[in-house]
Length: 428
Image (cartoon, rainbow, N blue to C red):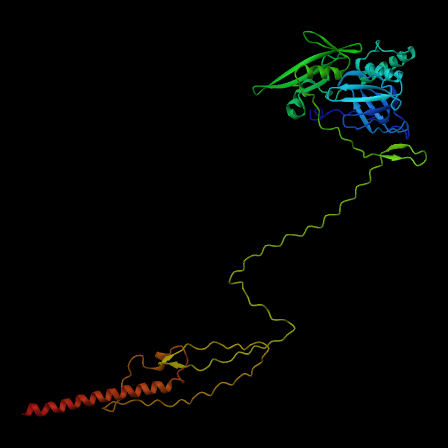
């Protein structure tokens, strides 16, 4: 279904050989003056279909201007000016949106242009013009060519789709129009017209049959209407609905090949050249993608280790012995930590200081000559059970024992004096 909804591709005509002139129903020199022109300009003009083409010379194959005759209204003849400066014959072509003036060399040339233009517009040879039998025969040939062209030519809103596909196209692309021509569903040679309009927010779909009877197309309505071509059928629906119906046209009318006009160096003719498209440069290869950085996992405190020293440098880190303890207010500081010297500076390992000699401890004696009892916790092991600094604090222990011995001896002496003083008082 998706492929059926795409617009049908019409094969483009093959390009003509270099220097080939286009075929026209009638052609000759013609002077033209448009609404914006200050004076007449001379062209080589040619009529083909419903279009009048203008060329710079009769050897050019590419036109420089063109005039659409689809909006033709009437012809207007002007009386000869009778001037020696301008002996030409003038007439005007009145269109729906503008008026274009022409000038030819003779009355015969004017009647020829008018006759051919009316033939392709009305699809009949005019009988109210001053023409020779040879001229009428040439116009009859032009009429046959135009009828054959229109039989093969279809409007831009004609698509080879079914009824359902036509409805879907009008529904999906409302901005492209609301009138579509399609082949007749009954297999006949005629066509059908499908329209889609909105009525109070509700889509209204209508289908109309167009019969092909000979060279004419007959619209099958209450009062059948005959048209000379499918373009006339489309114009009938548009004009009779006050332009509420718009022919469906997808935006696909762009050229795919670049072309330009170039002058031939040999004969000076202008030709249309379509150079071959240069090969598109290959895009630069994409740079290789860098791998994403590996996520950094947080290192726990246990896994943190100091960086290893450089292997090229030999470091010697001596560890000194613990220094002697210092005392502040008779308190012993905790033992010192090992001292690590700075790297790259080798220090001499100091010898251990000599230990002080251990003197024998004098035992304090009491008044009765017996050894004084040591209070609990007075020994060095009690004060320093695990420090191993007994030798260092021997002097302090000795002083403490002496002080306690003196205090003990003084206390016993006081007791004796009090006892001796109490005896005399009792004797009295």
